[in-house]
Length: 133
Image 1 (cartoon, one colour):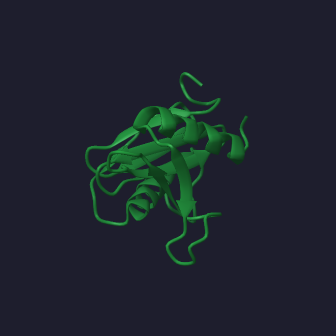
Image 2 (tube, rainbow, N blue to C red):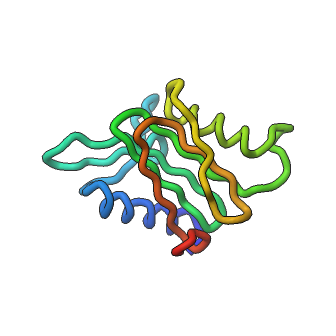
């Protein structure tokens, strides 16, 4: 259950349970493809939250908010292109949010680093490496 497709299904299950999503998908803002791009949810009868997903070995992080949100998790390890992984994660989360929003380091299991960007954000972990995995 560590492959990306299995982790994606866990993320979709979590969004269905937590935000009442009936549809979870992706949409590329440039080409309109559903094979890649920013995640989205459909929540009939109420406004859909902004959502963000991130994957690391055995772990998926899911975040949602009423406004722009980004989440990033990484395997802890050596720097990425000379950048400390915690700083890299913060940059990725802010990029995913698409705007300059507050960033907060996540408390993750040993061996991982992560950051969430946004305000009024709720986030969860799933997968074999998640604390209740």
